[in-house]
Image 1 (cartoon, helix red, strand yellow):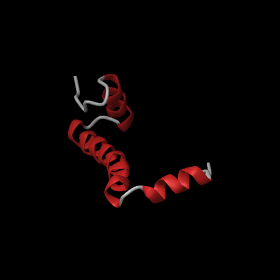
Image 2 (cartoon, one colour; image 1 turned 90 degrees about the horizontal axis):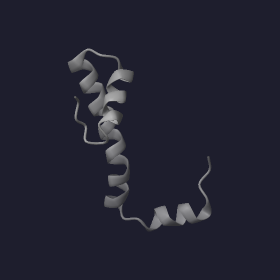
Image 3 (cartoon, helix red, strand yellow; image 1 turned 45 degrees about the vertical axis):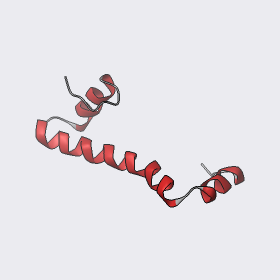
Image 4 (cartoon, one colour; image 1 turned 30 degrees about the vertical axis):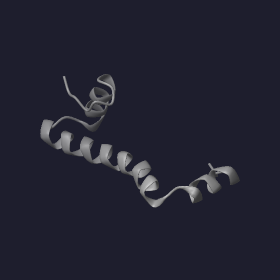
Length: 61
C-alpha cells in the first residue's frame, strides 16, 4: 500500500517526538509478547489471543 500525498505531508508536519510515539507502541507490544511467551512457555498465538481477550491492558487471566 502506497501512502497518498496527503499522508506524506501530514507525516512531514509531525514533530520527531510524535513520530516516535507512533512506532514505539507497536515495537513495545511485540517485545512484550515475546517476553511473555518465554515466561509462560506457551505459544505466541496463545499469548496474542489472551492479550486480545483482555483488551489492550496487557493483563493475562
